[in-house]
Length: 169
Image 1: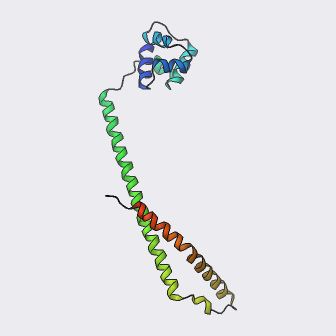
Image 2: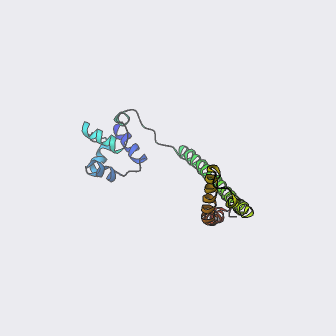
Image 3: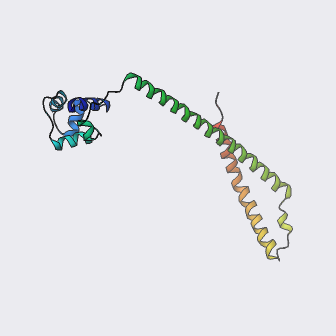
């Protein structure tokens, strides 16, 4: 059982006898003898083999390991295809959401710009002797000052983002 299981597991991991021999610091012929059942590894080497093959010792010594059949590979392939389609749909959905968020950002920036332009800085005529209007006026002026400096950069960035996330036919 060890010889058969070791060979099946080694092949399922995509390892050649030479690659496994390098991992175990033995010659390829030793691996061949183990797999043919001509010799048996000692207990320390058995542990090393299980670590190299990432398989429990009990599996190596236990009952026969069944090789994956072609039908199993087809089923796995079909599942992977479904997963790839789901990931592609998720990516498309995220891209679409980002696209519409950027369009909304551009619309919001344009609306705030128009509102600020129409009101023509109303806080300039406020009575700043009252603490409430002074604080509110400074806050409003700070917002307006920052908005007129940052909005063009944000707007341009959003427009570039809209261009990059548009749906390509």
